[in-house]
Length: 276
Image (cartoon, rainbow, N blue to C red; front, side, top):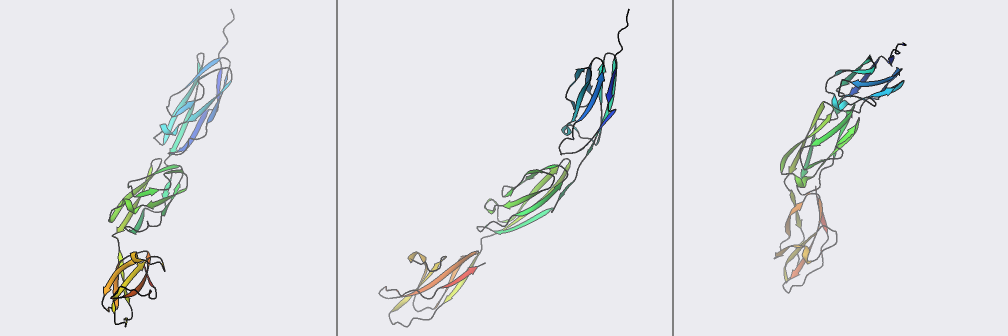
């Protein structure tokens, strides 16, 4: 009686080594070459290690891949086992996981604005990371140009004063890469609406039937109508203080004289004031 042939099986290489960065992409796949004279099955003993096939016949190749999402410790060990008949061969697999690096250009940003005026200019946060990262914020008045990225990038912070309250507003931007977390404190100081004034003076009118003066104000040079009148002054007064001028605007003024019959003179020379 002829004895049954002995099942033989060899694996190459004898071990696999992976390195990865927490929060980054998975490391490249590696292959295990199987040399066998019969059918075989393969298995692993770790959730973070996957095989593209678990069985074969004769010679073949197993592709081993790593899923960093199932890894939390720094050093991870696993075993790939391949069995043909009564013979089993194993190879060791090691995965070294690092937390990676995350650096932000600043840990605080400050904005100042006046309610009712234009939003302040945006400010940037430079991100340097060895892997992918995400960014979140804690306030509706703050918006971020980018909430995720990989490696280096820039987050632009913008402020909407219409969604903030007068006084000091605070928010936090949190950037996370793997197990590393960095925060940036964002402060918005929103001042109350501001105004200014302008004192106008002119030479007295010498007409005997003078009744008074009209003061006109406009934000467009040379454009005035009766809706532009901000004061009607009785008598021969020669000055007026225009109040409530908003910051960030330029105002134009002219004065006319009117008599007791209601007749009105032409406009005086125009003067202007910019409020900043």
